[in-house]
Amino acid sequence: MSVEHRPLAWNIGEEILGLDLSKPLDAATVAELRDLLNNRCILLFRDQFISPEEHIAFTRQFGETMHTPALERMLHPDYPQIWQVTNVRQKDGTESFSRNTGRLWHSDQTYMPEPAKGSLLHCKEIPSVGGDTMFANAYLGYEALSDVMKEMIAGLWAVHDLNEVEERRSRVPPLTPEEIAKTPPVTHPLVITHPETGRKILYVSQQVTCQIVGMSKEESKPLLDFLHSRIVLAEHTYRHQWRPGDLVFWDNWCAQHFAPMDYNQADRNERRVMWRTTLAGGPVDGDKTAPAAA
Ligand code: OGA
Ligand code: MN
Image 1 (tube, protein in one colour):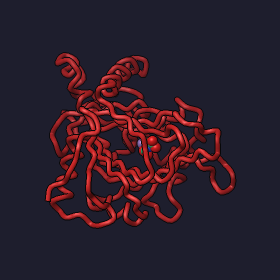
Image 2 (cartoon, rainbow, N blue to C red):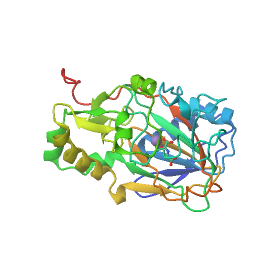
Image 3 (cartoon, rainbow, N blue to C red):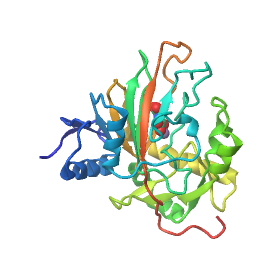
Image 4 (tube, protein in one colour):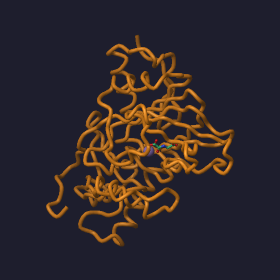
């Protein structure tokens, strides 16, 4: 049986119809979904009122779940495979650590030596207006470059540093010294090759890519900003308006995402509750190996 689907936007995203994610899928369906994900960058499944166990089981049909040693404050107390992304205050009345997750464009865990392959975000509660997530196609970011620019950046590597997030924003509590120690800066190629499609991807995040290896930060910034701007051209994006029961599965190699601050966070009744599982990836691969100085 082949999966029924339709595009969410011309250049990114596919809605999958007629599947119940609470039940195991057959191998042919998993392979077809994987293929759609690799090519269309994000998949939407509506009306999936699944339990945490079912969410984790669905994720595991595509590979191993990923553990992140830092940011354990985001984990669900009973399900360490689930990150809670929410503005709901903690039991002791303090602000949620994750309430401003994703306020800069990024893909998940690129600050790790082996970034995540995928993330599966499930909507539990959504504010009356807003709380959207935007997605962009990073294959097309690369393809939008001129041949000369492609040649110039071939073989370059860049630094990804989670601590840069705190440097650029003051909204979330700073990382603890222990969290900083667990997430030292890492380097990845500026252009990676998707391991399953073989297509090239511009691997530059607005959130954590802070320097090109061998250049100063001042030299790097305008180039990184320009390259990133090609990924998020309006025609490369899709903006998702959530409904409870939506599950969006994105590929962290070829898709980037961003959570605009587009709802009333001051009103405690405007709750946004999202649960995320993360699919392990592996080392990302580019044209050249890491420079010795990195
Ligand atoms: C994430 C993330 C954005 C959002 O879960 O990785 O960036 O809209 N979330 O909740
Ligand atoms: Mn994210």
